[in-house]
Length: 383
Image 1 (cartoon, rainbow, N blue to C red):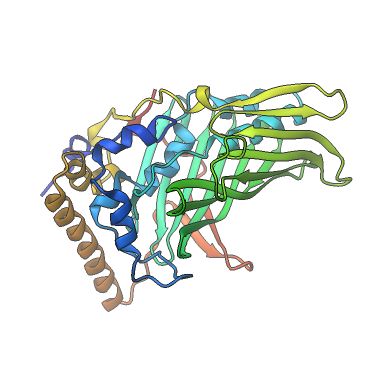
Image 2 (image 1 turned 90 degrees about the vertical axis):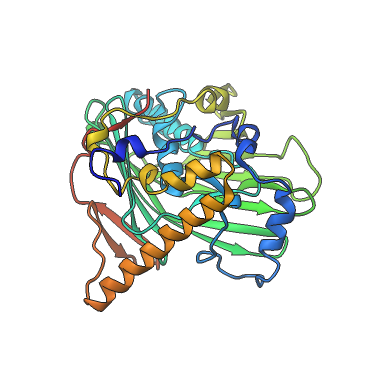
């Protein structure tokens, strides 16, 4: 048993996903990962929802999906959110928001995935004045809520995400349903955006891609962006691999102001239609390289529900490649969650999130609203 005060020292926090992740993550992957992945999905029918598929620890990176979502906000090489708030014009702010949206897309190594969060799991990290809090507000279907606030730059970010992975024979496609809403409070501007799809391909070349269309809108300024994330369909082509094409335009007239072009793991440019001038608006090397790992600053304040505590034993075993211990620890967590669910059901009690309210929208999606106006300073920090 771990008592309060020991939770923070028990926590296992691993390096964030970055441009270097695909090479560095191989240190805790099991051998013959391609054969293992194919054997895992052999008996799965095409089109099947994989939400309830239980992965052996050999297929996991040592962190929860909550941590991955959080990292996309608080782990970045440059303070892109503050830049969004600091720009002087609505157009320059919109371009900065588009660049920030691109920065939240991170590379994933083939054949491994983060843990599926348990119900009520939380993740709380601060970077400077930015405080980020996540909670798993639903398990089936999986729904994650995120709130981030920055009192200094008057920023609020609210996200509600529900990944739906499906198997299609030669690939797994995960649609990240839900919306992201970024508010620049002192500018009275709200930006809404969605996420591209995560596609894991087995053939002809094993790889992981972010694909699909992303829309960014700001009703107050009337500006809108349409971005298309592209990847290789068959033969490897550097010009297409991880590329982005799109435009920024006025919603009312559909008049294009900028053309967007580039690669999310390299650079993305914006071409001014009026002048023909091209400017780099996003540099992945600056944003996603050399990222620092969060650390526990105040062990006494770490919650028992914190991701890095819940999965600590599993993560530690994966890093040590002690697969039997990892499997045992992961099975214990899954059984513990089922037992709590059965107990709740026997008492006729519905699960209630601690930090968010959850509702279903008319579009059959989910909406998560924070209960508190501000996220407090976290016991886990990242420099």
